[in-house]
Length: 285
Length: 152
View 1 (cartoon, chains in turn cyan, brown):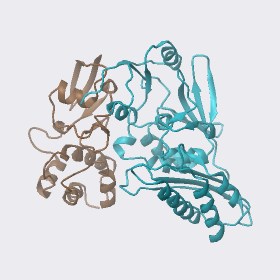
View 2 (cartoon, rainbow over the protein chains, first blue to last red):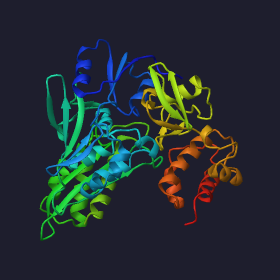
View 3 (cartoon, rainbow over the protein chains, first blue to last red):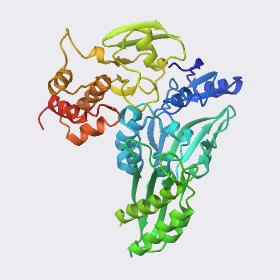
View 4 (cartoon, rainbow over the protein chains, first blue to last red):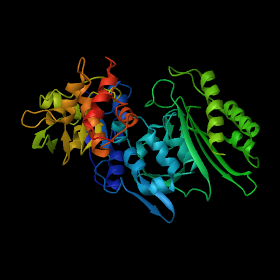
């Protein structure tokens, strides 16, 4: 089955791309790797007249460190991201989460920018980026703005990227000194699936073993990827005892607002959030 | 749109509609039908091809992405009519039943062995996780890939 015909535009610079988006009539979509958009088009859920592909824009696939911040071009593939030495060494949480997405032949095409713009609630990279307090660069025909990742996901498959704007890069601050971090995903069907629930955590302990900084983020637990603020508050200043971890896992399960779908009911998701938050936190003691 | 690329070690120059995927171009444009249309949504893996040596889903990649790049399909595996090492190993192990998944399996396995010449069984299963075999012949497929790999 063919895709419904569309015109493809392939700009070579960001200003050219946003200028094209600003003057297009009809439905236009930005395409990166296509691993989310093409199936959505094939199912007839979106029927764009034009696609603006970002693949010819030089520099959008670059990964570099700038004044301690990791800067990831929006078109960086997840397979490239998980292989970069600077990412694995400095931001292992992000490298690990990227490596858990789907399969090798999806990760080679799928991009970090595309993953965020698709705004799947069950994204693997999103909880890692929420814990790392990343920033998202967004360009339009006027200029550029920076959106904190905590404000990026605005609703069910909705983001802060407005019509006419392009996500150009993701900036990730350095991991806090001495922090421990991890990402776990629970897939009841098969290992390459999107997570029923995904949990990322970044924990810093003080000299007495008390939690001085805790960031906990969930995928598949609400209409968007979320930080579990109440669970974080329950742990701050505590030692990671079995009881404290259990209380935090309960808090996360209560503050989650999961959906029911073919993968699992809201109640099942809530229970799995409780289980996997507890398992991840215990592994970080 | 005009496309220049290398396919199975030969240069190609051709015109393709904007909305064609790599799979449309292979099957309908070039009548190269080793690469199968399975789900069309990037799930089943039977359209897996190697683009600049990396496995991709031909049903998801727009044909425009081929420009200046190198594509390998199952038709490009044999040389002078002789099967390559993986194809021979699949034949010896009986790793094909209906055969619909086999081209994708061969290319995913080829990418694995290029990156990791001596994989463990776990490595093989992980590399083939996105290639579904509905005859459920996974055991012999994994055995074939391990046989084609060098000794550990």
